[in-house]
Length: 272
Image (cartoon, rainbow, N blue to C red; front, side, top):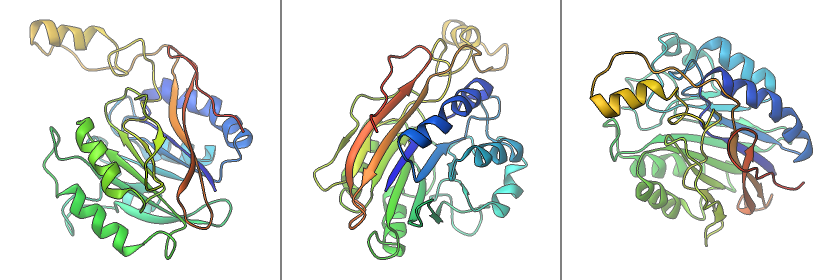
């Protein structure tokens, strides 16, 4: 099967860029499945039901979140009604709305396990992400329950992200990092057959500070004063993600290539 994962959508400009490019990418790359991290989609902070429905209508099959999961209060109730919207699986069990992992059917009929995790280093204190992914992989092993497994590891430290890739190598189709909003140049297939990229980057305006208008972040860096809100930058966005093709028999990766289209960054578009 063929699927794509797109990094954190930041505000309206990120949403509009994905709307502009995803239909063509879905057709030219013959994508069976699309996952998008949407935790910054609502003006940079969380996501709303209306935005989620618009992304599903666009052809997105699953949405993941992260440390901004609950910035929009309506998500607390909407996530229980929408199984395609996932929050980090390592929130404490039994006390958090929604799910952190789910089997979702792809366009070709394959069963795709999507797992959202949040890192432990320099992030909010949640349950151990490594113990959590061990539980999720044991519950739906690839080749038995799931035909493919996509893991979005929303984390700060590159070392922790790389550790998760190594830990899941041979047991997942893709381990991809989100959260830092900058695409890393290491999209590749690990020795055990798992596709990996330390960070997919963002779908947002790179003439910014990680997607936000530059003025307020610079003021905070230089004066240590908070005098305004962070607002998403409104220039042309770059759509960033990763394309993966898997072996239907094993679920392991045959191809792994970065995607970058439009905006400030040099383009990388996989060939069909």
